[in-house]
Image 1 (tube, helix red, strand yellow):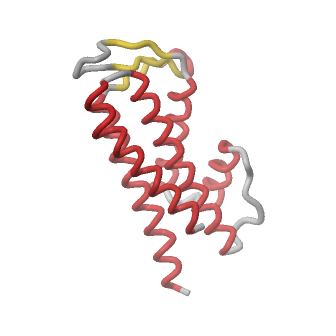
Image 2 (cartoon, one colour; image 1 turned 90 degrees about the horizontal axis):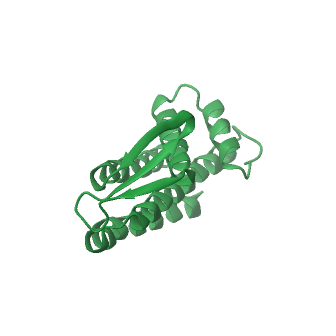
Length: 156
């Protein structure tokens, strides 16, 4: 559990560097795509830490390898935690965005944009500003996971 959480924190540091350094100097869709992939990894490690925590508490018996099954299991394990469900939906949306076909607009400019089409023809434009919002939300998620893991440990 601690190892998965530490992996999430390390991944967040990588995202921080990609966002504040790499994207600042290159302004390409490839860097946006890599940043999204790192956000996905970070949240994935956080979800894994929550699953390991739930297994320690004997709320679940096994942790599935598939990311979709992990999300479903977490939703079933914590059905009344709406904040967690929102983060899981955010994670699934980022995964769809990462796998989607995309086009590039205004590369090497301030308004570099990755335009992706996800399920049912929904067009999503990822800009530096929207990526910053996703980065902030991921940082909130890591704090959320830390709070759950640490608060529960103090109750023992």
